[in-house]
Image 1 (cartoon, rainbow, N blue to C red):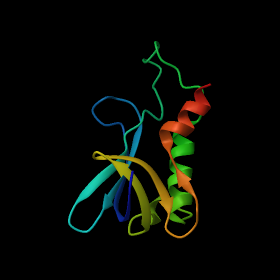
Image 2: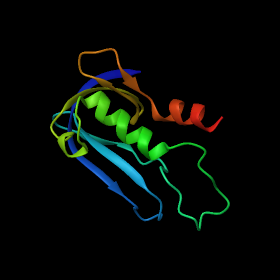
Image 3: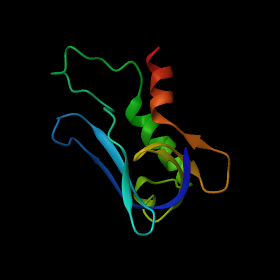
Length: 113
């Protein structure tokens, strides 16, 4: 697993092309960039074959803000975070100086159990 520092260059919450709520933060490594997010955070009622057991949207947004050290989503742009990634995939983001890491896949798995 590679550890990098990155500056958050953009933060987006949208319904994308799949019609479900997603959130992304874009990480600038200084010469290259990468997205973190894209998880299904909320499924509209027409997704009757799927259910969310937890508040994934609230958890994702809150933890990204907490790791970035901000109190408002709009203040997240420009903040520096640490990133754990491998083979082009970001697994976790972490506070720049505290030992506070957010791994959505692991957290969402626990929330779904």
